Length: 317
Image 1 (tube, rainbow, N blue to C red):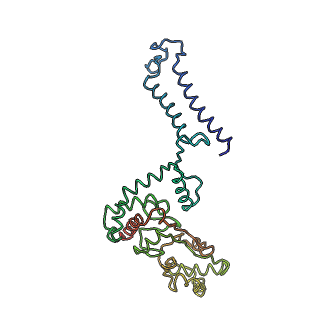
Image 2: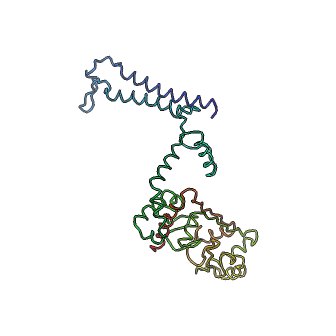
Image 3: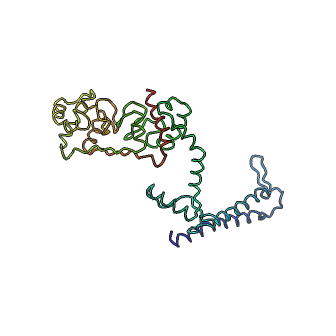
């Protein structure tokens, strides 16, 4: 932060505290010309205003908050570039990757800096680590039938996965529904856990340059016909002749390929929308969705529980 902004923030902060102090002092003075306890000659709906001073307990608490604010600003960052007498930081600033964060944390520990977040994480790991370790010794299929384990897995899901897949895990456009039995990479416990640990990278290429818009229309018509949709038969016939380009991933029958994350095109589940326009957009421009890896964020033991929770959702249907 530049010196200008550091001074600007400091002046505004300290000025606000000083302003509160002066305002309080002014309010403690009797400026009305009426003796304390006397009638102010204001009446509304039968209620008479009395010239009473501010409550003493309230005044003392107000002074206490001002003193506390000054003490806090002395010991902790808050006044521009001032780092506080304790040298405390709430987070590692300007980190752009997990690896940078790890390096910075290790360096901070060597420098003797107080990193509250790291201390709290360590305390949580010491307390709850053995619990997650015990769950990790059980199979995912077993955990998927344990109500208490599923409650823990659900909380982890809501904290880390619901932003994309929704709190009910039913997904949204571009983010898979995890409660059905339609899977891009397989719905086995091992496949789900692999997705969570290492992430997934979609790789549906765009075919506009290879097929042209007319060729894309034909392929889309054939793809839609695979799920029983009513399409132009002449377009679908022409698209079937070009299907070999798509069969490499989706299979000759269009049922998809778990190994490549190629979706089944013979059902009614469409990740990016099943309208003709949406499918056209997909084939024309491709799709490259990313499922992030969670191994370094949650760790294998917690992912084991999340896997059990997600696995249990698809088994309810």
